Length: 117
Image (cartoon, rainbow, N blue to C red; front, side, top):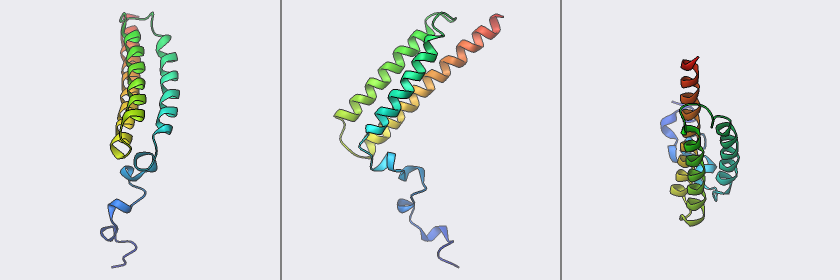
């Protein structure tokens, strides 16, 4: 069997196409996560701010607070955490949590408003 096409011959640890081996999760210093996270947080806050007066009352404001807290968490992990994969993984997880909170809030508010019509 040709060793070039045999996936068993290649170590998964050296495969640059694997998600776990991407530079942002392996060798980054974390600054890019803060930049992208800050941009995402700003966009999420703008979208959520337009939903503050919608039902259910307080949900969008709670989501804004959660996004801000998660971004502060990202900053703390970046500046206080030890360099390495764990820090980068935590930064990624916190950004995904921001996205999940914002998306869930938009879906809930849209659902409640849709059902009210």
